[in-house]
Image (cartoon, rainbow, N blue to C red; front, side, top):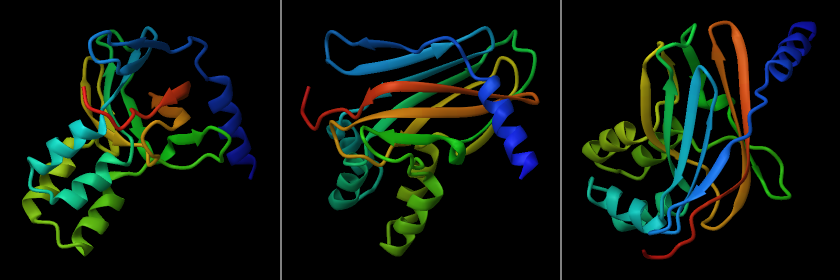
Length: 190
């Protein structure tokens, strides 16, 4: 228990002071959130359900399966460990938390859980592989200068508001940032 309390205290005290920036694309009306410091930058971009439907149908998913993904609040994520960062960045998306407006914190809907469902529903192997490569890796280490991008599924319906707590380690230092007032894209066409 003492180890847990100490780890939690370190996580909180190593928290990040900078606030995420929100922007809206004037052409599409879609929002994005970005946070950065000297070592790391994290960007989240809304994806319309229509974009996700089309994308996953184009990769072999049946309409009802693509619809299920589209209704799960999909974001594109770009994560960079800056070239001048002092240490590798290590993350596990299982440590991230979604806090719906007025709700309790919960996990992201992660790729391994989706894969269990896709196998049970008989989704073709090629579509399941495309899904795995489309989503942001659940666990990864980025060396200084590395970056990666992919999609995450929040697990909320279109238009829903939430906060997102992102957690990682920079070398041995626990880090976190809270993205407040994020919103799932509405279910509309551009």
